[in-house]
Length: 150
Image 1 (tube, rainbow, N blue to C red):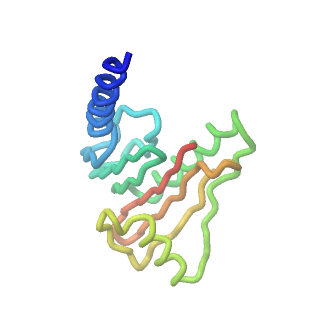
Image 2: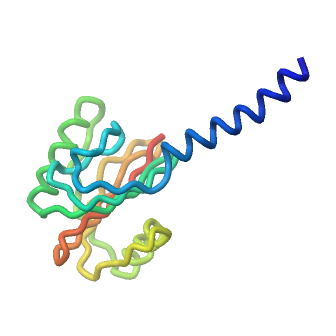
């Protein structure tokens, strides 16, 4: 029995590390159609995608137009209405220093710079904390999403 346990634990650790290496980390895609992950939902015209996945969520940066982003946010809101009283994305006006601090907290580890013209949209959030926020820079048409799952 002890031999089984002693051989199982190292085997489990090795398999966990291999799965984690394949499932989590940084991934790049030329366009949204290349992503085949049910947790990653982006506008169909998203391009130049950099995705950082971790066990409880993801951070993603991509290029898109404001029109496409707004259409996608409306679609996400409608799809969530099946499950909850989803409210539409809301443009969030905060003191700029708070926006900078939050952006740095969420994205600095990926070396993504804070765009001076960023607008934040608060997305759907569950009572347990799952949900996401969208950051969009009009000048360079870059979108940043911070998402958490529970």
